[in-house]
Length: 403
Image 1 (tube, helix red, strand yellow):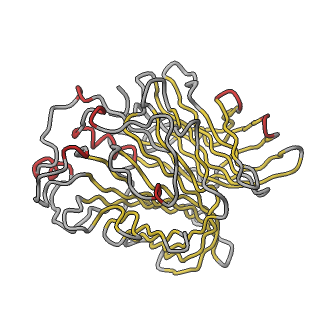
Image 2 (cartoon, one colour; image 1 turned 90 degrees about the vertical axis):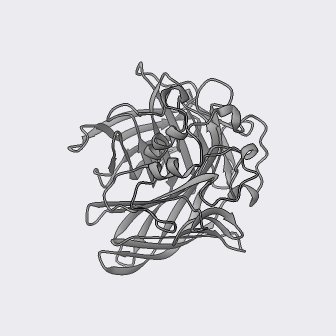
Image 3 (cartoon, one colour; image 1 turned 135 degrees about the horizontal axis):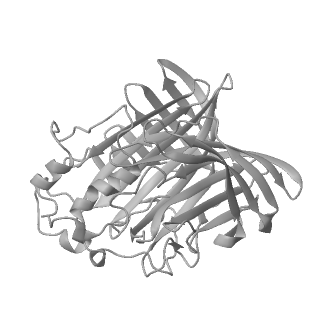
């Protein structure tokens, strides 16, 4: 789950899409066809939005996420250029033939620069409609290592883009494809790691929220259109530390798009995507307030073995932190273990992580996101599972993300 909102009054006005603005955003050395890539953790999807706030366009120029959206597939796998922000976000748990476990994340972002109404009448390649970003992370559980890199590109010459035939998103050789049989194909690589995966959805896509929107704060349009592939059978190969190995496992897809979400009284969020051994799944998010409370718009979705979904409101579940980890890099103190209770579905579980150091340290912010494990009961029967957790706002304010 990602949030985006900026206060345009905090930044000077800009001439959107001009070479000078884009060059400031993508600093030299940068040539067309060249993407910046980092081994160190220097930029997250959160910092992406903070950086792009300098190009803020009024939300009135973009379509808002409003009730009544009718989801269609495969249409909604593709981009929605009338909205300002969207992402294709894959996470998963993989194993190799020896049983070693790896977590991964591959995410593609689109951040609109020019609303649809402003896109006609130009032939210059230097005036682009949106910016393209992608993130690639590997959690090596046996080696207790966390690796992250990113690419960003203007895509002026087609080296990055969205919705070109079977390509849903790409930045150079980092690609997301939709195959004719409905499977997804993912590929990302850098000098330290390479991941190539085929992902097949084993259950119907799940729409989160109510009436077509996932509300994140009070107010019209403070929402997203949000759906997930909650259990994707995954096979492929991983190259790490110079060693290539076949891998298999399960993945989760999050797709969201919208134009305005965060509120001034929100400080961060806790987000979970959980897959259980009994064939059920659970997505939860808690919008954290500056006064220490939880926003009433916090919610979740429980998915049963047959794919039927049940909307959960804020008070339908409880999350109590049981263990904290303090980062030596940012000083952030993160709740990395939780006691989870969802009485409506008879679930009582403990959430923990096999790798404490999965923090992305950025400038000027930092957050934690990584692989988690679950153990507990559902309707008195033992259940286990795994998933991903994202924790924000624990290492200082989310600069640029709230009004």
